[in-house]
Image 1 (cartoon, rainbow, N blue to C red):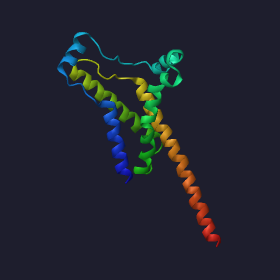
Image 2: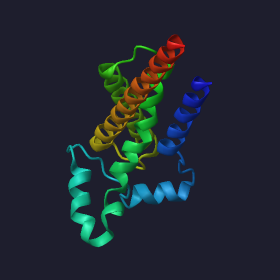
Image 3: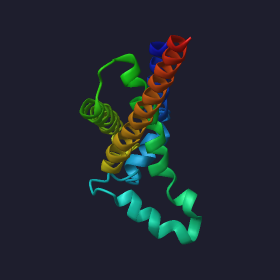
Image 4: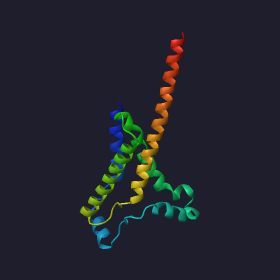
Length: 162
């Protein structure tokens, strides 16, 4: 059952970060002709710096929407992975979530190359926020696992006391 939820989650992530793809020839042609498109970000924490500069104009929530959304997007990844693959620890979660995030960013770059313009951006902050989100999901998993273990031990102790 958990594997099905995880597979559904992965499909949702892919749909959110890859689709929709532009297929209108006129749109693609105009984007290339007028050199439109998003820019890539290779400077760590630039999204956070930009967000702080936008707070006065759009408010805190709107300014930090993108980084928070990236953290939230990968939160389930860090939570479900150790359930599906027991023994998945801290280092593996960081490595695999970073690798999955990097795969997404590189896929976006390949799509950009095929289209001839930057439809989606490669953003190092996405890598950081996605990995952080998975790490936070893993931390929640560990706390819940400890709590469930505590409850089981206490229940067994109560049964043994009878």
